[in-house]
Amino acid sequence: MGSGQKVTEAYAAEVAKAAYLWGWPLVNIHNRRVFMEQLPEPGLLVGIVPAGPPNHIGMLHDYIRPEERVVACPNQDVAYGFGTLDADLGPAVVQVPDFGDRFWVYQVVNQRTDSFVELGKMYGTKPGHYLLAPERWEGEVPEGIAGVFRYDTRCGIVIPRVFLDDTPEDLAAIQPLVNQISVYPLADFDGTMKTIDWTAVPTFGNDDATSGQEETQWVTPETFFASFGEILDEVPPLPGEEAMYDWFRVVLDAAEHDPEIAAAARQAALDADPIVKELFEFRNYGIPVGHHWTTQRSGARFGTDYLMRTAVGKSNIFVNTPNETTYFYQDLDADGGRLDGTRTYTVRFEEGQLPPVQGFWSLTVYNKHHFFHANDLDRFSLGTKNKDLTRGADGSLTLTVGGDAPDDPALHANWIPAPADEFSVYLRAYWPDEAILDGTWAPPPVTLA
View (cartoon, rainbow, N blue to C red):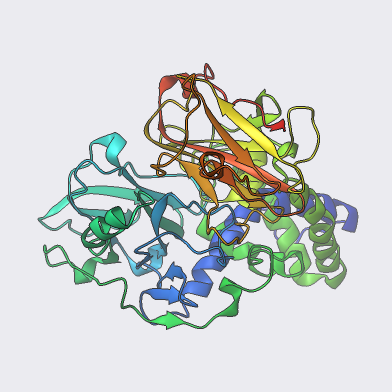
């Protein structure tokens, strides 16, 4: 539609600004896939971040380290895997070992960061091999494939999560399980449960995995429109988006033939970028649930909720669907003051009021860049994984955040260090009960001690 149309700079700028706000997560996933194409085989970036070439994953055998900068808001309750999908390479097989009673979930999202699988303990998934196949693939599904999940975009992301207690015994127990988690092209499928020793995989030296304080910049406004035409080809429009795609393509076509229109589009992306950066702050988006906490209920099933898709993509990309994990975000104390690690705060769960979950829960501290605050305790979160938390005489559980380390050993076990700067707290509820999903339960206030 509209090839060769005249377009004013002002019109191009308005459409380009909308395109940036709409397409930011899609470009993010595209650029991650392009980056992973450089990797020769599954392994670790700088020895700490699981990765692999498209249609493969890398897998950790322990918690993620605080130096990680590839994905904001990492979780230190699970052993992670990470990899990209490329529909142009055909289907990929994902292995599910027998996890027994252990909590696990595999997140698999398309280029819109919407989930297209159900693989996890909450689904009663049986061990075996499952196929992640492009919708356009018309090949034969071989015997031994337990299920097929299809996606309609070029790119996807696969992130296994396997719960791990904070004990040496559980770390040892999880090793045989994680060694059976892998993703590989359908051509390599032979019906057997392949095993990889993830403690012995190669490491690839890319400083982006650990450099700087902020998340790796997967989207840059200066180059956004250089690949945006590819994104429109890689991600088919959802019902009702067809006209919007036409608007975007008219401006892209005009920019290709007119340097001034191209410059206007680039400037529009630069002008829109501060809006995306505002959405990095948890207090600027979400559904209020009391005491300045917010949540969201469209994670990994965003559809046309573009505000939430971009906000989550910027602040804590790769969230699970709400029935798999519900997330609560907090930048403020009970009085509305910005959380600051030079002060001490408490989060008190009354008896019977811990997050109601069938999986696990945790409270994590993130610095102002949404990464772990490195500390001598190597402690970044507390929750189900911890076996030494101290309860009050009345059965309550009080967690302490920030300030100086408590002298009392009982209180020290319940303390999470925070940076002497602005920080955020983040509550995860894996496999939440209905009380969380319907809003009956919400987190208690973060109170200045």
